[in-house]
Image (cartoon, rainbow, N blue to C red):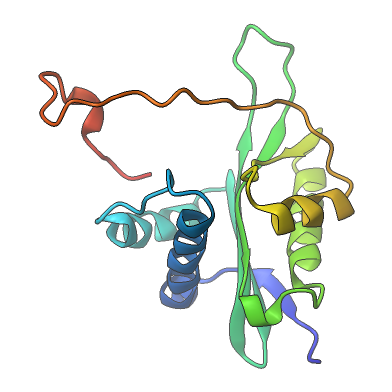
Length: 174
């Protein structure tokens, strides 16, 4: 087994990380069919990735094994609405490791990199979501010492084929 090299993503990582990101979306869709991938998802990734690399409030880490990117993690600094006590947090947007590279410590090393960044920016916690149906993901996070904070629930609605007001459906970036 080769040990991964975990580092900050660079612009030249955009395509291979984007490929892994699409695999993440596909896997989420297989686990939970309410997570359908938008037709323009990759275009939006390609648009936003360079911006994340320049923004000090975002981080993208990659894990390389044998000079190939085997996994990645993305996160951004976050704070609660002003009605709550100020509490800087880091929100882990995505964590993905190629299936053949799982259980080799890569995910843990990516999480450790995010924990280090969380400490450097003075955030009190690292927050994230995991699909309820993703048993392997929930087990991974339990091994990381994660504890539930909130529970997100959904109520599925019937949606008209041609809604009159489609202002909320316009997409800009992420």
